[in-house]
Amino acid sequence: MSPCPNHAKRLGSALLVLALLSAQGCTNQCKGPQCVDEWPRTRLLAFSIGDLGKVNPVRDNQSALLEGANDEGADWTISYLDSTVWIGQPEVGRVVTRTLDDSAALDTWTGPDSFGDGLGHVARQDGTTDLWVSAPDAERETGALYRFAVTAGGAEASDATLKIVGDHTADRFGARWTVCPDLTGDGEPDLLVAAPWYNPSTWTDTGGDTGVTVGPAALAGAVYLIRSEATDAENSGNISARSVSTMWWGEQKGEQAGASLLCDADHTGDGVADIVIGAPLFDSSNDLRDAGRIYILSGATLPASGPLSQAADVRIDGERYEGWLGSSSVALDLDPSDGEAAYDLAIGAAGDNQGSGRVYLYQGQELARGGTPKPGNVFSYRSSNAGHFGSWVTAGDVDGDNRSDLIIGGPDVLSGTDGYDAGGAWIFLASSQGGWGLTNASNTADHRIIGTRAFQQIGRAPYCTDLDADGADELLLTARAAETEDATAP
Image 1: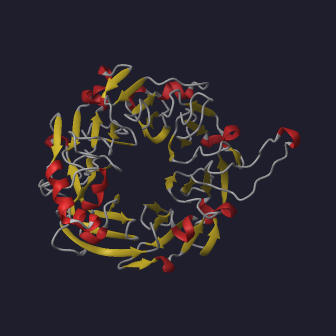
Image 2 (image 1 turned 60 degrees about the vertical axis):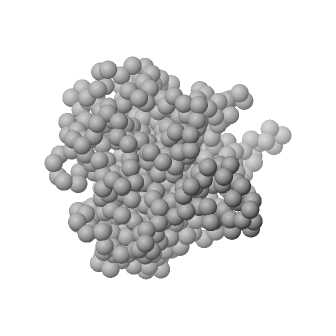
Image 3 (image 1 turned 90 degrees about the vertical axis):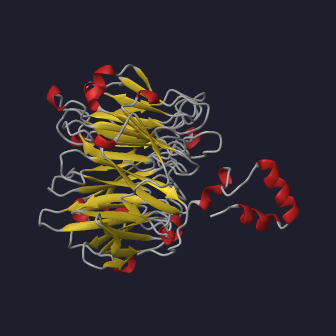
């Protein structure tokens, strides 16, 4: 799609447009940060370790695992189950399934604004599997989480067997959520759901002249551990999140607790999965605005509802101005043979170094020791541009050695002079851990997957899964693309 006629329509003067285009050298490609809408479609790419070199440029004409249609939006969320790709399409309020050998949509679930922003599956002890879909913009951004039976044909949001709703307008309940192993003792998985814009209309001030606030401040964020007994098959209809959960909240205005979440691994060495909550806009001191904070709550001794500052067993404060520690997080087992019970923890700080971004890796033994842990390794993107390296992190065994490899995404990374948000993904193999130093530049990654033109946004929401059952994960990445002649979804 050529942007030049669009500019002409907006300016309403052909002569002025011609002068501008001549001065700027415009041909048939939009240049500048205003041009993101020129790439409204998604291509899903799959990368196998055997096909990767050191540096891997992403071209628009390279083969894609799946091609999105024009009406399927650009911000996909990916999951994989039973040889089927599950795709959340929040821009159009939809979840669809597709097989790998046929790009035609199989089943479709539809809902309100942002429906499909997050999706996941919960396998229950009775052999059934539930589909959960979030829509953080539903009901004036109160946010909601929907449960469906996994049946052929899909369904509408109104057919959900259970709907869990946030507490207040603009909370954005469900903006982040994840499935936890059993933390409540009934043998079934639990849900951890964040409302990072949690914005109560009132809270209790019991401090008198001291003005101490015991409830959450505006936009402090809140996280709900939703008990599995509240989401079993016997419960249906609409329920309030607060009524079926233990809830912890931030206390500092605007800290956005819950911007990142984890609950799938033991980081404290007690044999029980822990809860890790990121608050990237936490002010660690008057001079360190938006430095960020990580809260770790021991799954073995989960407290009652209350402020995170009191509930957390471990707190890690960012040490850099506007560093945004807690932008992302992932658990890793870098060396399963080391006998350590505690998993390693990678934390993104996407605002660090004036927006270039860093990722901090904390070893499991350091976390289990208690106190204030220090990172063992730091990964950084060296650039004068705000690429936000570390705004996404994930882990997968991409080389099949039964160890967790670290994948870091930076979808805002610049390519060349006009490649706004070309993005990139960096793979650091666990097998190379012996060569890691305290600080590691992004160009030391074992493999780099780099966008080559504006708004590809490589590195957004990376996802690892073993597509071909060979024991090694493929890395799935989305890339924004231009419109096609086929304007509708299959």
